[in-house]
Amino acid sequence: MSAVDSQVGDVPKPINKYMEDASEDFLYHFGFGIKTLDIEATFGDTKFICTGGSPSRFKLYAEWFSKETGLPCSENLSRSDRFVIYKTGSVCWINHGMGTPSLSIMLIESLKLMHHAKAKDVKFIRLGTSGGIGVAPGTVVISTAAMNGELTDKYVQWIAGKRVERDTYLDEGISEDMGKLAVELSIPFEKGMTMCADDFYEGQMRLDGYFCEYTAEDKFAFLKLIHEKGVRNIEMESTCFASMTYRAGVKAAIVCVALLNRMNGDQIKIEHEQYVEYEQRPFRLVTAYIRKQLGI
Ligand code: R2B
Ligand code: URA
Image (cartoon, rainbow, N blue to C red; front, side):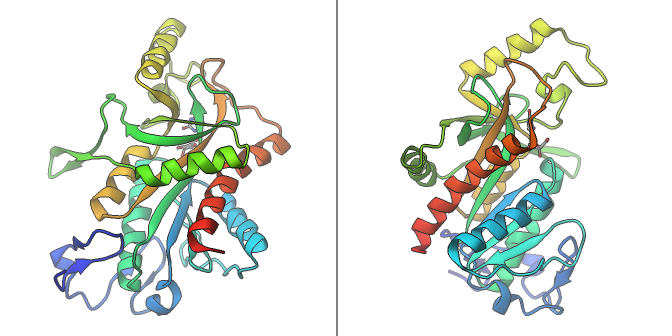
């Protein structure tokens, strides 16, 4: 490994040459930098970064994990109002907002954070919500692969006016282990591909948006097509998540609960108690996996 390699994941990867000798690196959306926080002391022991959309859900997850394990839960370590960061032992809980632009910012700053912290063998897990495709509400979908809105397995970026396609990959070992744990814990689950849409309404063929220039028949034909291709849920981050983690050499998994079966409707109307129970399912599965891995 050369001096400029980063060992955040289990595969050494060269880091951005312009950052090699940087005397300051301010992580703008986390609100701190290498000069304002002892990053190595605070984050050096990190082994898991758990992420998902909502800041309040990730605060709650961190508190639940702390209660379950007896590990203390940090205060919110973020100094910006864009993202929250909680830490319970070697597990960080960071929300990523909605959609790939927000997620990509959170991932880049988390990877830089782990690099500055000299953390090693860190795994990234996304615990999210999604719309199920042919799966019952409450089913936890363990993603086997990510698919974009053009129905290919690439994450598309626009750089210098050019379209750049990045490969996507999710760790098979983690999804295998999670599947076994879901059986043990009697958590209803399915393994399948996850489609990443760039918006919640037209990009997911909803009939309940402000605009709608396709028919109900078009919607069902599309859902049937992606179901036949192996898609079991739609959300808004998977291609970016599966590509940036792969590019950084870190192992990653995506585990999302389906809030509804899109074959039966588009509106999400769930009683609060039911919603809380649904959002506990990915948490129960992922934390069982983490606790087993960490022996805690
Ligand atoms: C799932 O839920 C959010 C939209 O409601 C989005 O972030 C996603 O992937
Ligand atoms: N999140 C999505 O992106 N789509 C859904 O249908 C539900 C949650």
